[in-house]
Length: 552
Image (cartoon, rainbow, N blue to C red):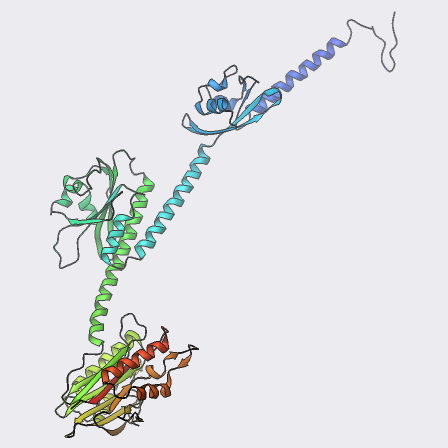
């Protein structure tokens, strides 16, 4: 008996026929899909480990077999031989990051249906190495930046040497010793500066002549060579290390090269329990030593310049005024914000048989350049006054001397100046004859408070060969006082607006209010008033000279 099925072919109701063939086809497809899934899993670049609800491994792909050979189906993950993964399984954490068989592994867990889970584990060794290298390079760069900043601030030789000893600890070493030879005239034997971790500050001393020979590689470093790292120290240098430092391990010696050649050596010492110096650390230590040498060269150059500046300063600062019989004189000076405290304004006083010869001037420009010309003017006056003491004639000789100086036309420098003679008179007064070359007129403060201007005039000195100069004469009675000053006084800008000049009117008022003061008291008062007017602002050079008959 047969039955006709709608939409299909006639066939038996049950039993053989097509059904077994359909099941075989589905089974074959399932097997093919499982094989494909396995190929896909084994082709992944990360390890995949699956577990059932009890935490037993059910699947390990090919990469898991390479990275985690201890795992296989049937292994209890919480008790496996991969410590970091076993701990994560026991504690229920979803990640781990650990070293295993020399590789850096990082894993993450994902939950699956039915209480199962899958661990995805990546080999991040190269990635971690790159990150570590980047962090190490950043750390080295930061160290060199900090060291460079500190070394750059070391303007003195001893400061640079102390910085070279302290900065490498503890980043590069547990102790650092800088061996150097001090500049002449010190004894030619090695000195050292040591700093170790835990020290309150660097310690210095000097070694015997055999110190360099006792340390392997130190002689070579002091000659400019760069020896390789070595183990241990010589007995003499080992005594330099602080008590309780322990047994020295690796030692790295680098030359410190200054502008003039080898200036010393940097010895980095690590304790025995610390690892040795790798190539990057050696390069970093050499770079630091080179920067220390550059800082030392800069400090030595600064020291030389500071010494020359002090010598120049001492020779160009206004002198202590000599005592002149029958005359009371006082001077005041402010340089134009120059750290050397020298500038283009000057004053001087020379005793003569009749009394004295004074000079006050203002060289064009300011700072060291003006100070050099100031020195030339003062030296010329020192010489010329021996052959001529009449003010007008002397100023003419000074003009010729400045114009005849080598390179005068190229420099185009000149000066304004007042030259005056002080002649004692029988009644105790002073006859003052003043010659001027383009300088502000001196002022006379009478005993009754009247302020008078001594009109001199004239052209700047050293500017023109045919320059004309003026001369005037005045008499100082007892109680009178003459004040000569440079334009730095009247042109000082300050006050409420910080732009207003001190001015001649304010100067006249200040002098009138100081009637009865001695020259030194009046000069101090004027300088204080100008300083208060400036209130710390930048200003030009300032010089003033006050002259009065000596009290009877």
